[in-house]
Length: 71
Image (cartoon, rainbow, N blue to C red; front, side, top):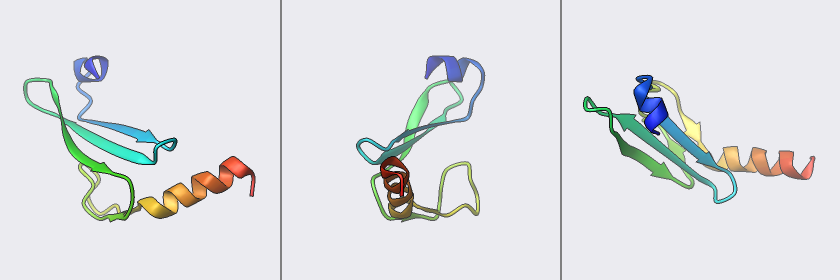
């Protein structure tokens, strides 16, 4: 995260399909990241930094699972 902060990256996402989790961090004025969102399922309508974007997390995991098994 320090590297991203040093370049001024405002949002840092960790998407882990292995444990089916999504974490979104936002850079503060002092260059640190704070967790803004942590989810494993459901539908997210208010994604930090992505106004108007709706993410169906359950559907995302389904698509990833299908890609992993080659369907």
